[in-house]
Length: 383
Image 1 (cartoon, rainbow, N blue to C red):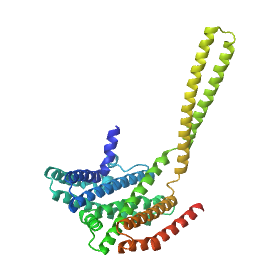
Image 2: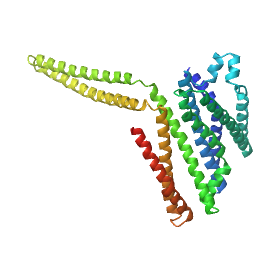
Image 3: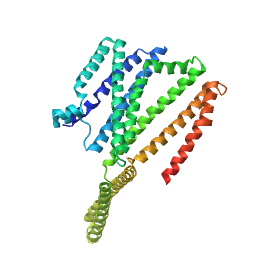
Image 4: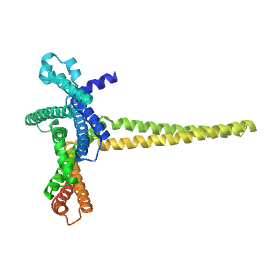
């Protein structure tokens, strides 16, 4: 039954899972035939980046499904809708569903041809197919988002649309930019730059690309964590803590009773009986000691989980999501620039034009602005 649910839910992601499998196959082939030439390294880096972005896109779809469940009471599940809705409702809700088998068949065919023949033309065709489908999805999601924002009223779940939809759109846009031509340009000009301008342009593209990927992963991880802790009830956790405290009190009462029994019977018992009572008393002490350790660990676990749950219970606050997202982007950008400045200083020296450009850009303009913005966000959060 659980396997059936997993299969039903995976249909929503099938158009992303198939290219993911393909990229792993392509990565394995390129690593197996790895050489030191630029084309081979470009293909390997393209596969790695494409896999990273596809995983981000799948996690974005998962977040959209959870958001749908929060907004409507049910997650996105095509198979359940087919079983519960009539043909007219399905025709309206899943207008594009009728071509899904065709799209999946094309992907499966191209994947099979590439695996069997090893010809790159099938890989290129599949990538173009996925990119065109991604563009179609971007246009649809963006249009639906703007329409919903126009019709919605303040205070509704429309406040959550931006942090939920934005990473999905960014991931899909990254799928377009992750190709051998773009990756080859960046890799070639970072390794063997044609000019200072081309090196600066390649590094800027690299910084922006990494920042976009990190942002998508952060927001998706943040929202998934928020959905997980949204289900947890602090009252239930407090009940578990109370249960552990009750067990501890019972343990103490048990020790008192054992001690009273030994005192009462030991005064009148013979040597054999006294030895048996002493052995039983020692065994109960060992058992109680082990129970105390177990109860202490349980208490710490439930208490930490309750504290974390209470602290994370408000993660879905729209203002908190916006503030944390901006704060993450600013911190990530500052770290990227600092790491880049150190790398350029080590490999190119402080007198190189590229090093001086990024040093001035980061230390004089970007980093001061970002640090000032971080200070304002901190003061607003305290208020």
